[in-house]
Amino acid sequence: MKRALVLCVLLAALGWAGASAADDLPLVLAEDFSTGEVGGLPAGWILATRGSTPDIPVLSDEVARSGDMALRLGREPENAHISNAVVISFAPLTERAVITFWFYAMDHDRSLVMGFAGRAQGTNLFGSSTGGFVVLRNRAVQAYDTAFHDAGSYEPGRWHKVTIDVDIQSGTYDVYVDDARRAGNAVPVHFRNPGVTDIAAVGFGFQAASAAQGLQPVYIDDLEVRGR
Ligand SMILES: [Ca+2]
Image 1 (cartoon, rainbow, N blue to C red):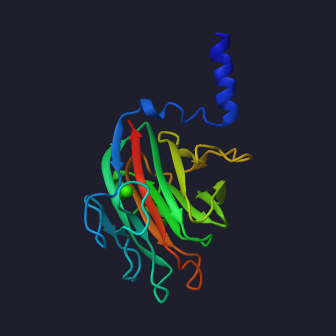
Image 2: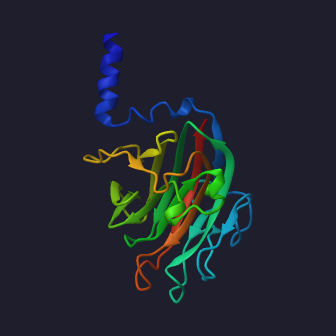
Image 3: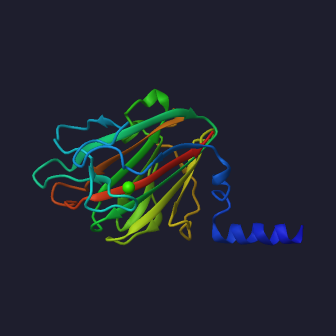
């Protein structure tokens, strides 16, 4: 009893009590971006067009955390600052979802946008239709509902792990960077779209802050979804 209490206090102090039991959840999706051709879409993913840019996320062998390939999000400098996105769907989760992925950014400019939402949203996982919404912004991983909330800092040129622990019924989630909750990050963050009632898709795109900023790619690898 005493030992269990000590463990609980320790986990709470580490800010990790919420996500510690994620391994007990059924594995829904594991994606290491190993299926497909360099320069093409990863197998099983759907293109979600956003605006009128030719830039699309593609498989790349420039940087990989596992195997030879990762997902490369980027844009050509003359193109719009928001690229097209890719989305993968899975059977709807209605209770809890734990989404983990790794990213490798080339600089501190805003570059990555990641969203997750339900079956009713289809591939429309960004902007006001999204459930949860995570970006790289102001040298931090941030989650957005009606304001940006820091979840943790990151450095260019190395892999960082993002864990998103979603309480689907309450429409809230916590974000951890490299298995830690940032000090002072007391939120759970609310879904941007309160009408999201299940989680059935995850999507990634490139979104710079402006046409003049965010010209370097960011890479995604080793995405995993657990839940029920
Ligand atoms: Ca890989």
